[in-house]
Length: 539
Image 1 (cartoon, one colour):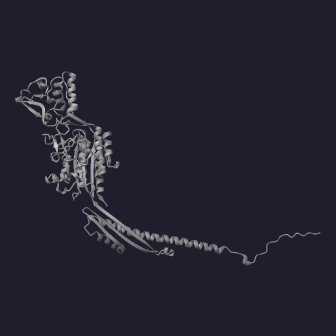
Image 2 (cartoon, rainbow, N blue to C red; image 1 turned 135 degrees about the vertical axis):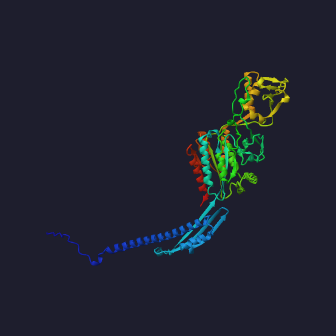
Image 3 (cartoon, rainbow, N blue to C red; image 1 turned 180 degrees about the vertical axis):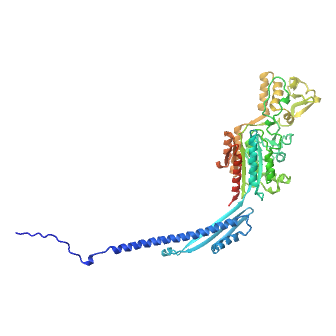
């Protein structure tokens, strides 16, 4: 049998209707993509047009409100805004212009609205885009009250005080040179071991034990005033006498003349000089510069007292004293109403606190030794005696130059004058009186001599304020200043670490602290003055 296998041949051609061309579908897709790209690009064009129009409108409003808020221009602020808009062809777009003015500030607010038709976005049903704009500008000329609290202690002698004077004068010149409206007042508070108020300011307080010397016008502040907002005018404030509680004495067992141990002027806590008196707030540039030029470096360092009085001169409670001093002619009349309240609008209070040192334990006389009749008599021949009731004898007068006890003052009662304690301290330092009159007089032997001396000198006659307490008092005032938004610029002028740390902690913020060297104190004061000026004009 023959089997025939049929091999497959080529497929038969399909009818034409069953053949599909893909070229047409690709063309439709590309057209769709192109349309989408054109629409997106068109929308971008609309957005660019919108942003350009909005930016033009906003720019016009910003420039118009800034010009209208300028306190130096005298035109109607509303008219100024419309004039800017008209020149740009945008005056019909303004919807409102408001002006808020007070005695030293002006705020101008303007609003406008623009509607811009779209080209491509209309295909999506967005026929127009709104372009609202608003702008506000404020110019404030701040009333500024400044207290310059400057260290004039003995360590400032020489080139330091000279450089400080130049720097402080330039500071005043920068702030006051263009202050035609007298809106800036500056007070000067020099400090060393004390703050010398000067007779006029001291008279405003209840000062007691007032020294005979006119220019010795310091007071011993009680610790309580560092925890209060103000220094009460009825609070008794013992005067700091012209007294040397610091200098030592040769403690020999034989008489030494008081003329060898008189008060050392450099160690007197309140020197007899008008150079370092507090200068009340003033707008008189010349008076300030003259006072700064006369500063004299002498004495110890009590930064706490300087800061306390600096805050006092800026405190609103000081206003009645200012008004009284205006009436006396000691303060310019244009400062009526100052110091302003801490929250008074458009007011800035500033303290520039500078020291080159650190706290030195303050010394002061105790009650019973500041003024009034003393136990010491001066004979008409210049020798002295001291009365002490010894109970068991009638010889109650110690005569140092004879090293003996007598029954009457030397040379005799009728020829001896009882001295006031202020007269005693004018003649003799405290250590001399404690040793020559009490130590030698009441001591029965060498050890007893010294015991009497130490007891009287260190415990009875004087008190020392510990440095830690002074640091704490300073920071109390710095915290109070910070809470009341008083801006404290702290300047450490080549100070030791302890002093620098205290000033850093006192500064309003770390950026308000300056660490100055001998040659750049001028740059520091210039920078502070310029910073104050930049804060003064807020726009």
